[in-house]
Figure 1 (cartoon, helix red, strand yellow):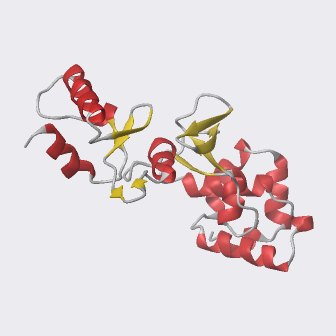
Figure 2 (figure 1 turned 90 degrees about the vertical axis):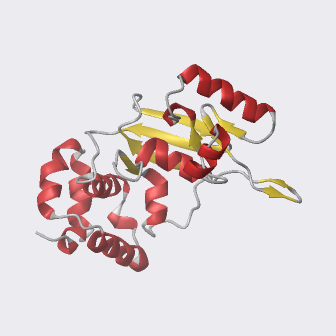
Amino acid sequence: MNFEEYLKQEYGLNEPIYVDEIQFEDYSRSWIFMQMKKLVDSGIIKRFDTGIYYFPLKFSFGDSCPDPYKIVQKRFLSDGENVYGYVSGLSLKNSAGLSTQCPNLIEVTTNNERSRVRDIKIGFQRVRARRARTTVTKENSNALQFLDLMNIINPKFMDETEQFMLKKYAKDSGVTQDQIKQYAGLYPAQAMKNYIESGAMYELAQ
C-alpha cells in the first residue's frame, strides 16, 4: 500500500486529514511532509487550512470542501474518544432552543485555548474560542456547559416557549444537582441565581 492509498483508507474522501497525526510505517516526519506536498501540487489532495488537508470529491461545478464544523469539533471539542470542550455562547443558546438567531460564528469553550477568548477563522468559518474555567472531560462537560448556559440567560425575559425549552434542555442534559454544587464556585453568583429563578434546578436529578 502506497502513501496515497493509506491516506484514503485511513481518512476517506472529503474528511479532514491532520498532517501532524499521520503515521505511515517507519517514515520520518520530513518524508511525510514531502509526500503531502507532492499530493497537493498534483491536485490529488487539497489544503483546507494550516496543517489540514482533504481528498476532494469531484463535481461538475467544482471540488467539494469539508464541513468546517468537523474541523472545529476535532480541534476544540472531541476526538471521538476524549472530550476537551463544548459548544457555548450564542451557539449554545441556539442549540438549546433559547434563541432563533442563527450565529455567524461557532462559539466553543475548550482546554485547547490559552487565551481567555479569541476569534479565529478555520477555512471560511469564524470561531470564537474561550479558555475553559477548569479542565473539561467527558465526565464534566455537560455540567460545565449547563452552567455556562445559566450564566448567559435572563429568566425575567423568557417567554413560555423559552421556559419550556430550557426545562427540556435541563432534563435531557444528564446533569445532576451534585455536579452543579461541585462546579458552581467557578461561575459568577448570577449563574446560580438564574439557575434557581429559571426553575431549571427542579429538572435535574439528585
